[in-house]
Amino acid sequence: MRLQELVRNTRSYRRFYQDKQISREDLSELVELARLSASGSNKQALKFVILNEKEKCETVFPSTAWAGFIKEWDGPAEGERPSAYIVILGDKEISNSFGVDHGIAAQSIMLGATEKGFGGCMIASLKREKLKKDLKLPEHHEVLLVLALGYPSEKVVIEEVENGNIKYWRDEDDVHHVPKRRLDDLIL
Image (cartoon, rainbow, N blue to C red; front, side, top):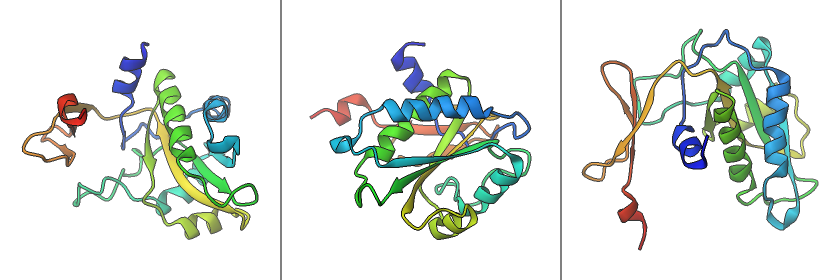
């Protein structure tokens, strides 16, 4: 897949075939992409928790919030939830500031997930302290992002922003629409 096609297909998926597992090996290969990515001052202060067991995934889900623009939806129902998660942590024994490293790592992982036929969603709206406690993480690890991963069971399409409205939405067929600003509106 060419890079532009890979980026275009790397969407935020929020519904999955929960019973289709992603192997620990595939998840480790995705973290390897993050490991090889750029890091501010080359501090490499990120750590990763890989979860693909149903019980562990059930531990993560209550700490996540989904699709803030779709108020009437509480997130994926049982059977549509992610079959894997990668929790991105900042190691405060290495650095107290993580800059944009977790964003770079997350995008590398999501591009790799798309290449493998997976979909995912970067989740920053989290109950961080609850998640930290539930996963029994050491005090010096800060929860930065959760990447929800699985085989997507929904269709996500990109369309042009109309009247300045950037809110994503679902149509009557449950297709998820994501408005994007025009390139001419971005380049000054």
